[in-house]
Length: 180
Ligand code: ATP
Ligand code: MG
Image (cartoon, rainbow, N blue to C red; front, side, top):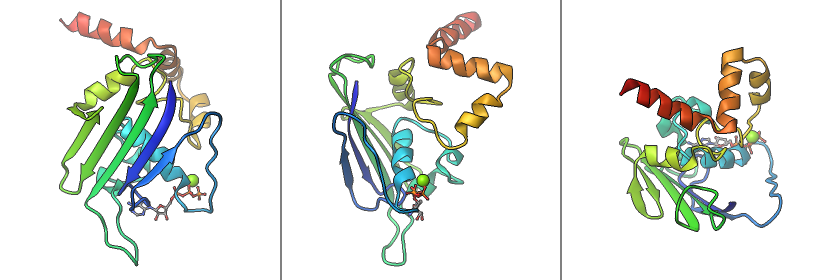
């Protein structure tokens, strides 16, 4: 599975539609302080279903919508799309290319799409379950996270390891079965 493109529009400092194409190999993002490097990573986390505004350095989710500058009026919508090459079927889907879109409006409306079809957040989470990507994922390690893993309580650390090892899905199924 490969990351192909990231399209950002109205998300944080990216007022204009910005398309990033990822080439084979390692991609580095460089730029002065405050130029939006971390916002790119946050756009990736957001489109993959991040639910915590705090985790995106905001107070409320609408803080991700471009809030305007002295030169430019605020926008009403943030939209991010991410496209993966899934020819190796790494993600549990029949599609060889998967494009996920998330949009949020100031009035609180939001939508998720997979390959143009509107889906629920749950479907996004399920797509990434056991992939090592997605919610609470450790494929993205932000500043301070390494320390927090080491200083976590044993139970927390266990849940982190279980998540990485792909045990999470089975635990969820077990909990569900026990409730039924
Ligand atoms: P550093 O090198 O310091 O880590 P960076 O390149 O990672 O910087 P970011 O943190 O991604 O920079 O970008 C911060 C910028 O994004 C700030 O200028 C901030 O004002 C702007 N920004 C964040 N949220 C919004 C928003 N909702 N609307 C407009 N601009 C925003
Ligand atoms: Mg940064």
